[in-house]
Image 1 (tube, rainbow, N blue to C red):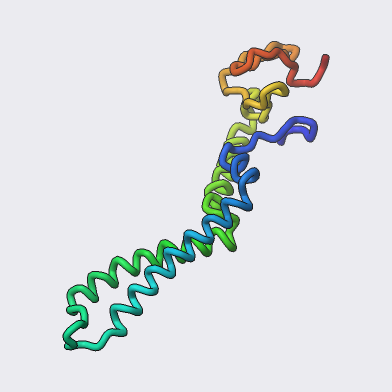
Image 2: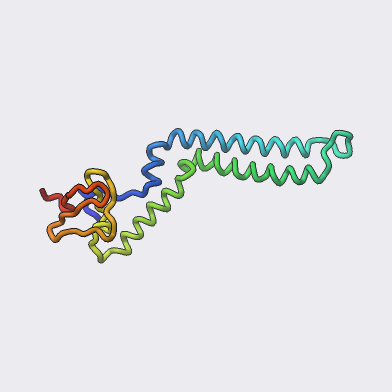
Length: 155
């Protein structure tokens, strides 16, 4: 487990979803409810019309439209439910990615590479790769921005 003064490595999905959680959840809920409503309206319209009337849709069209409308209802309902109650469209994916990062850290338990401990560059916030060259004193160069820093926080 990394020490408390070392920044925790987070997956990119959770970093993005934290910044746009409110608007993304609202937009997901609106789109979900719209798709759900369209599908439900088509199903109700198709099956509420009288059979064998002059202007009633044939049975084939009722069944065909119902299959398409069921896809709209299922997708819209899932999107709306996930956006309203589960933290957005990427909520579970973000949780799975966080869990994968924790499991990877547990697997690398005996190793002390910079990436397994979760070191990040203090200048740009990039995580160090598994092949990062760390000096015996803890000095390392960020592969993204080129800044030198010490992973032990010694100056």
